[in-house]
Length: 378
Image (cartoon, one colour):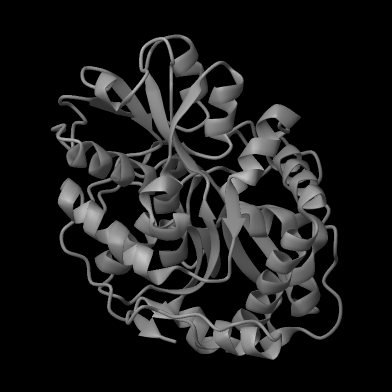
């Protein structure tokens, strides 16, 4: 796949604009095209592994998809190499856009600069709530797990040592920020959700900067997704808590698929094809875990200009689980956490899911269907 920068978001806005969301979260910077400045962005391979070929679905030249250069976005990162989604789309070309955080991806979806995206639960909840349920639908799961509280073991040896320490998260109001604030509240620590000040200080910082900040003593720990957590451990940090331990059966949504509500209505055949490709990619990942990890690294190299060493890639990849199930009940719980943390007013989640096409695909492939936990179409 090649990558591009959404037309509707001007370069100056990508670099400098901030917007207030329902959770009062500041939008992180949008990663530009592979040839532009961004998170280590460097154009190394702009040629898709599988070319668009055959009849165009619904007459569309392309479908614009968004995702992160992240291990927790394993499905699109692996598909970037294997091209299973492109094979399902025939002559309609997959046109990917790379982001470094969810709110900017939601902005691109609202601007019609992307049609479909892989994204975390909190940005999806915020975007859906802010639009009154008019902008998006969650149409599938993608990954579970892959988040840890990692610390400087010289400063923090247990949860009792957190008081007075500084813990980083990737962004105010993002999925990991909400999880940390909820965890601290349950342990009796008081933190102002807006400023991050309190018994434990919460510093919001870009994922790419967090390992260096911890190494140089600017923070004492971080609640982060993979591969940032594994990178910190490789530099001498310690995993204090795997977030899986806080969830029933160790499962919680970290990445799901969303689609523009208008695009779903106008181009269901294209959405169904993308879902078929996603389901096939997830099955391929489970059957070829070693090659899947290599694919993720190859995609990282293409997008950022650098890949991960084995002592970071291997534990990061093993800490995630690909899944077609959106784990809807955990999204509902994460929304409650955001409300309790003071980062979100009570969200409107009714009808946030439309799993009709996913279940059609799953049934056709002999896979078990999934449930929306009462929050939309099954």
